[in-house]
Length: 542
Image (cartoon, rainbow, N blue to C red; front, side):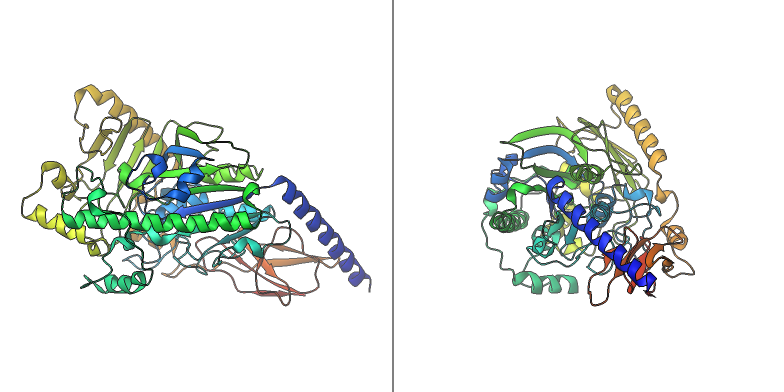
């Protein structure tokens, strides 16, 4: 009887503490909404692109800070998302190859340091309701909901507007992926398909019925694209998908307004890397890693422009700071509102079935790229990308010798070193690596890149097959050991022998809660997960 009474007292105290924490969070912690378009460079009217039809984002820009020099850590989605969600460069924990869950060598998962937590999980620890909409793709997860650490999100397959499912007064963090702009949207939606993948994409994309808004003659082509009707058509289709994405952003913002949350919500809109077009996606040129970003804070009045360098690893510490959470020391980035950085860094490794390794460093003027496979061209054969008509037409002209030197360059080996003056040469077509007058600049960037690689580590120092063996155990994904329960006076403390994240579920509940403090309940179940390992078996505590 004494134990039952003590447990009830502890349960009441825990309930009051939770209510108090929720009330404090409602007054002190803002809602945060991160909108992430896919495969898109700064093709917005507010960024000066006259071909773009983006009225909703352009309106958001009038009450936001528009960042002009934001760079992802990779030109392709999974490695970039791994860095974004962790705040660490993907090369530092085995997340650099595209993609771990579908590796040609066989499935494996990247493994973060044991003490690292994705920043949404840190927000969840602090009382936030966290949700995303079905796409994960963190390299220590698969692509879709249910494949990653269950402790990161309250809901990982949310439907809009998911913030309505939080507790009254609870702040929320939501990551909504805007997939309509993905590279697959450039695949032709009718006619003969190039592959089974193209055929499946046609079936799914044709149902979206994206209207044609942008005329092919209206698009401006960079100098490395040949001016062909099929090239203009594919670029125009990319713009049409951007317009459809913008319309969805408008609906999301309208829902916030209808729920009376627009003035209580910090909104960040960006893209997971550059354009889903050839010589952009997968590359370390600015076309592959330079992305737009709008930051709206309710206290901000009018439009502002900020030209500072921002890396995707800076998102985690900045967002945590918005919630008044001290960023962990293990993060590679910094709060970009408080500190200016001198360099951004990016990496390219295996791209689907093609082995490669490149590292890039960029300051406000120069970009330096180092390649370990100098004979590998950016325009190599690639099964997925070759579903795009313009890629096939472009390569055909190359094979017939009908391209200008600038247009042909993408189909030639990258070379060991590339150096570009991004202010005078924004399309990065003039390699200055051998220019004597820039020898000092190249040396400084080289040294800074070496220092960066030493500081964060680079798992590509070993072949991928060796890295995969190191991450697995007996050729299988590792399994997290279950948590242990320590009972005292009717209160259960859960501990993990390997510092894994722990979740628990009370009787009758469907969703798993994140364990953050001792549990005063007579019965519940619990399990744990180490990022990059399979989750543990479930234990019953009573």
